[in-house]
Length: 413
Ligand code: ZN
Image (cartoon, rainbow, N blue to C red; front, side, top):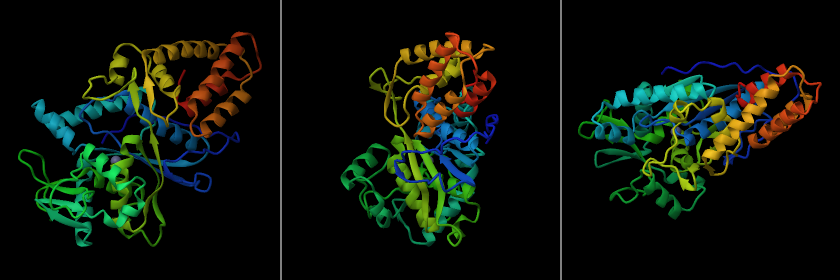
């Protein structure tokens, strides 16, 4: 799949603190692992445009990617496109449109939003349709290993051996599973939490040939296979002798913790025999004016709409960075307007020849980012520097600060 344009993050010679992250679970051990960091972020289902929640999630992992690259760790970043999934087919059917065309148009919109927001592109941006042979091969492998059973024309994955790793109660898991597309009440399931691996063909839906019959894969295995194949290698099924774990970090929005990331990890472990990811990190959800942002409520704030209304993408990026990533957060128009003012002040300071000292500012911004991506405090440091500059302080290097802000925060001002 076409990727959006590459952006360079120059490595710094400056000794900066190591990145510390508050993982949802696990520990990707950034201190030890310094050769190549394997990052997988769950991508969009392309049936609707990028909203602020998506942008906030991808921005979170962009900060990690940038900081690791800046401080000398090369990152192998892979993201998928869930272009085979129920919501996409349902939307296409409702709008009497081809699912492939709908997917393509929404991916194009997404990549243009990511470009505008200066999100570093993944090294591999893989659509499920492009990885179909590999996904089918993996499901066939699980069938051979007896991790599956057939029910009503579909193939289910046996989750039982992996339930020890569930971090929530079974009751809670059952509730969330039902809310997020699972079918815990389907009669005949061996375990109510068993996820679907292969969906037998339904009328009019796209399908592919396989030993399981004509059909399509379920969502969770798509990410397991795309991550393993692109980050571990095509021989991932035989990599247990050389590896103790799969990838370094799996990320996404906090709505993916369960079932998606739990199920993907279990499926990957069944395939390879080792733990899928060393660490998991999740970005909180974004609400609007006190309410949850959702398609059903019709209150999504779309990045493309904000851009169309004339908002500078760097102001949108600044506004998202002005809030912490980990907790659920509320978005208000004032968040954006406030950032607009702050960016104007920052730009005006950066346009001067004589500026306030920058050495400590760079160190301080880096310390805040390294401290679990505290971008909000990092931006406050920049506000103070802009104010000091406006008040006549001198002795700094505006070029150095400007390059650093661009590299670390992705703000090209
Ligand atoms: Zn995923």
